[in-house]
Length: 490
Image 1 (spheres, rainbow, N blue to C red):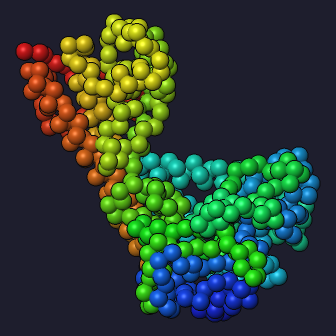
Image 2: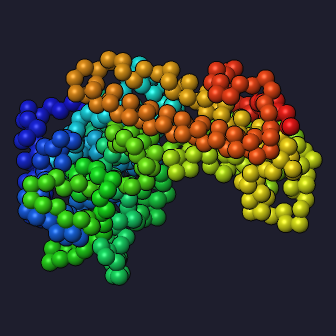
Image 3: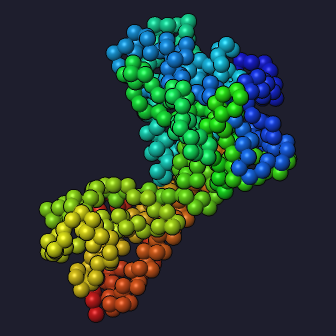
C-alpha cells in the first residue's frame, strides 16, 4: 500500500502516539521508537517484572464482530454481491483494514497508517524471488497455497463489490495487492481472541459486556464463514519479537473501564528495547510466512517430510496402516529434538515388513489402535523380520538425501531486490534454508548410526551398496520403494 500522505514516517508515528494518549492507553513507561529491528518499543523508565507496561481500552481492539459492525463491514455484509454467500471473516477484516487505512474518519486510521506499507514475508516477494530463494522447500509450497486461497477470497468479492458500491469500495483501492498487504499486516500483528476472554492473572468472571467484542450475533454468524480468530490490538502489537521473553495478555479494569493489558515476566531497564513474544512455538516456516523474519538455530524449527503412497500396497499393509491410525502420505515433522519421528518410522516399517510378519503383528492378543501403533513405533527385531528395520532406515535416508538435493538446488544469494529490503529477504531465506539443511544432515547422521548399530549387532553385510554413498537415483516423491538395499546376513 503506497501512502498518499505527504507527512514523513516520524509524523505518522507521532500521530499514532497522540491517538493512543487521546484514548487513554497505558504507556507511561514505554514509547514507540526506531530500533535495530525497525519500529518497536523502548522503555523510558524502569519496568518491573510482571508490571503492566501497555494497556488499551477494549473499544480500540479490532475483532471480527467489531469489524462486522463497522461502516465498511455493514456495507459489505448487506451488499447484493455477498447476499447469496457466506463472507470470509478474514476477508471482512481485510476490507475493514483497507477502508480504515484510507478513511481519515475511521477510528483505527492513525493505527493502520503506522503499519509498514511493505512487508517482508514471501507472499510479498516476486515469483522469481520465491523460486530462487525457496526452491525445494515446504515454504515455497505453503506460500503458493496461501496466495491461491487469498486470491480466491479476493475474487469472491471484488471487483463485483466495487462495481456495486464504487464510492464505498473504489476498485483501485481494493486490489489484490491491497488484500495481500492486509493479510500480511493481520498475520504479523494479530493476537488470539481468547485473550479477551480472561483476566490478566485469572480468577475473575469476564462480564457480558466484554464478550460482545468476540461474540457474534446469530445474524452475524449466519453471514460469515468462520475462518478467523485473530484480533488486532493497537500499541500492544508494536513490540519486536524475542523468543526468550514470556508475556501475559488479558483483561483488567480501572476507573476508565475495561482494558486489554500486556505484561512480561522479566523487567526492562530504562533505555532498553521492550520486546514481546510472538509465540514460543513458531518454526522458521511459520515465522517467515507470518512475520517476514526467522531465527538462526531456532529450537522450534521443523522440517516437514512427506513419504507419499506405498507402491503396490498389500491388504496387510493397508490394514496395518488403518488399524494403527496412520495416514498414507501424511506429512511428518522432523525437528532437532526428534530427528526421526516415531510415526515416520512406523509408516516405513509397514512398507518393509513382510506380509506374514504383519499378520502376526495384527493378530496378537491386543490389536487395539494404540497397541498396534506402539508395536510399529518400536524397532523391528531381526529375529521377527530380518529385513524390515534396515530397509526402513534405508528408505528414510533416500528421502532425506533427495530432500537435501532439492533444497540445495536453490540460490538464495541471487541479487533480485536492491537495498535493505533485498538484503533482508536474502538473509532470512538463507537462515530458513540453512536450518532445514541442518535438520536434514542431523537426521541422516542419526539414521546411518542406527543402521550401523543394527549391522554390527547382527553381523549384517550390504551387497551392491557402498556406505556413505550419497549419489542416489531419482526417487519419485509419490512412491515408497521398499527394496532400497540388498542385505546379506553372516
